[in-house]
Length: 190
Length: 190
DNA sequence: CCCAAAAATTAAGGTATCTTAAGAAATTCG
DNA sequence: CGAATTTCTTAAGATACCTTAATTTTTGGG
Image 1: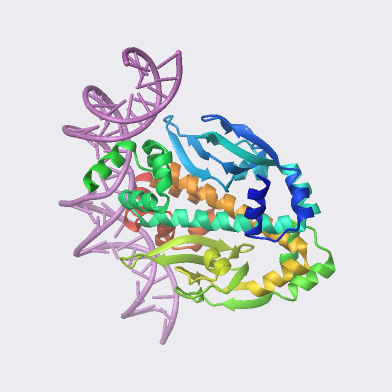
Image 2 (image 1 turned 30 degrees about the horizontal axis):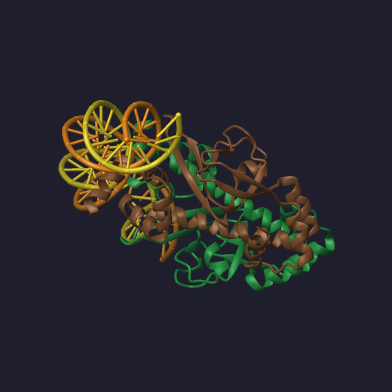
């Protein structure tokens, strides 16, 4: 696990071994079982999770009681509910493991302590946050420019492993298509 | 201008006068006339702009030649094309002043030089980027949860000054509604 | 102040996508 | 292995929103 996060960090900022050790010692490991929640609605999201291995989804319940998936995260991704974690407000969303998932996690206090101790970590998270923002802007672009069918084909092409690992109705939810209509789209493509 | 940005910075991080002076001396002022471009499509976005006063829109042209507005920014906002600025890739979008707009701007090199000289600035931008990400996630939520009419009423309520300062067809574009349909929605509301 | 250009409105017809409801297929787990 | 549960498919009817095209209203520069 230490190797994995070291490699991940090194993609963005160079840390020496003392720094890595100091940071790593504050990261807590945990395993979530399939269907277990990392975060439930109406509670403050206390942690930022780095996924060592597994799949996590973020979703909320709409007025009609349908689950609306807003994000998937896999190995080497950070996942949290940003707004809840940063502003310490109750989350409107759930975080749930879709497979057995191993994470390293940090509380906000720990993270802020580490920012002050290791300014390079602040740089790392500045960069990670920039990348998240860019990813998010791209996602918005896709919804702005593509119709349902195109969204599905481009998603299937971009992350083919997801099509295997995640049920189709969850992909439909993430792509903002009803499962029925996605089914129809797939039928007409074949 | 110096006072304005000092006050703005102080919202997030405390800087002393030496730091403010050091940073401020690297910020270049510029005035853009109404309809003037801060950035054009297919060029790398070289700067990050802090709006002292004015309105700027970010938009792209779709396949049919329609302008699609993705963002508005006013006094005390930063605006740039994130992906282009950070990754130094050609922008797919335009940035255009909708009124006479005064900005302070920074190049990427300058910003990175300043990050190293003033680690607190890295903190400032880490926080600003987090806030942008949160704003973006909220925007996505609105599109996920609301129908056209609701999007318009909530927008009109959230930023009433925009309704005055920006033509209706631009608001329609930002809200992803055709101007014709927005017109119909407004008629049926009155 | 007037005219050209820009912006907003109206209306008819069309379509992408949803809703509902049911049944079929695939997984899971005792 | 078999029953229960979960996931996927089919189809008919409904609707939110778009397209096109024409007309009206507003705005701003000379």
